[in-house]
Image 1 (cartoon, one colour):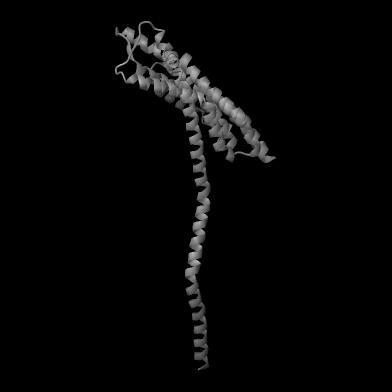
Image 2 (cartoon, rainbow, N blue to C red; image 1 turned 180 degrees about the horizontal axis):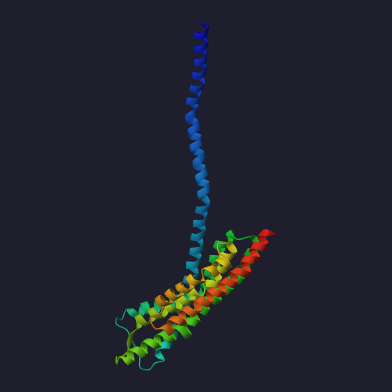
Length: 284
């Protein structure tokens, strides 16, 4: 009897805590789920904040382009004349337009491209403000040098395309047309589409050193890594040149691929200098 009583007492003692645990397990599970939800939200909030920051920077960039567009629109005719200089220098060529309404799209495209170059410093400033939180405090002083150098590189890429790359490619094509005993009556929209493609593409390509500077400061790339990937960069430069260049001759391909390789080499030097400085600053 004593053993039975103790057994029943033990069983009751065991059942009582289990019942209490069972009753509290729902609260415990709810608390754990709430804590997990809070943890997930706390991890997602920075991402949401980044999206909000990106949205803000995009809005400012679009607004700056819109203001630049309004300014450039007053000089639309002069911009059209300036962009058509490479082809009008050849007296055998005549630009033609197929539909009356195409004149509006032509002026719009010319003004938009000019606005992109004019608003480039503001757009690059917004890009810097977006990545600045990921930099050290002492690294944020590079804002003005970055924006100034990137803006100059963008303009240099456009100038290189306007004075060298595009006229060379255009002359090759026109000589080919004349050699085929055809009359070169070039559609104005096709001409300006080719012109804008080369100009803008080279403006973006010339950003390679500036982009590598940012990536090296963040720590995503190093000079050694870029040097080891040089052969891939060489192959990529040829592919990019083949896509941008409207011709298939080696001379025009080299005109585009050469600067890309050179800019990549400058980027390696930039990563070596500024990457080493960041590492030394981190170690100190």
